[in-house]
Structures are given as C-alpha cells and as structure tokens.
Length: 102
Image 1 (cartoon, one colour):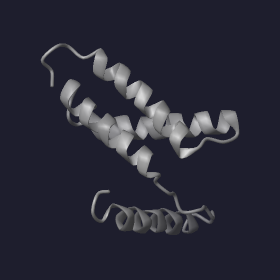
Image 2: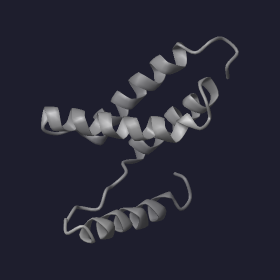
Image 3: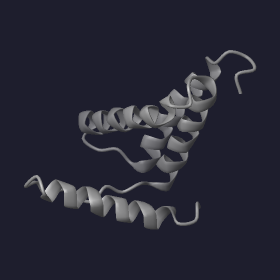
C-alpha cells in the first residue's frame, strides 16, 4: 500500500463530487480499487519508458474511459476484472516495445 494513497484519493473523490454539484449534478465519489491502482501505475510506468513520459497520465485516462465503457456494456465490472483488463493491455504494450527501451 502506498502511504497516503487512500486518503489522497478519498479527498480527490470528494473534490470531484463537489465539482459535479457545482454543475447541478450529484455523483457518487469515485473510488479507486487497490488492484486497479496498481495496474494503472504499471501502465503509466510502461508508457513512460516505452513511449513518451508525458503520455503516461493520458494512457491512464484512456484506460479509465475504456474500463467504464466495458463496465457499462457488461452491466457491472469488479475491481479484479478491471485490473485484469488493464493488465492485459499494459502487457501487450510492454511486449510490443522495442528491445532495450526499458
């Protein structure tokens, strides 16, 4: 567990909820599953060393969109399923990288 991670993301979730309220929309605070957090950090790491460092945050953003679309299409998605989905794409990205790029 990364020290302070849960507290940071609980606070961040509250900030998203507050910002939505300012737009007259009520949302549940976003939560970050530990397995999903690990996979997103790994995706960011692989992206940073195999592509461009500045693409790392955007790759995680796109992963979030893809996970949400998968969840919506299936009707539900557990944290473990989301983590496995991200892991699969991260592994394919990592295996496609040129030798010595890490």
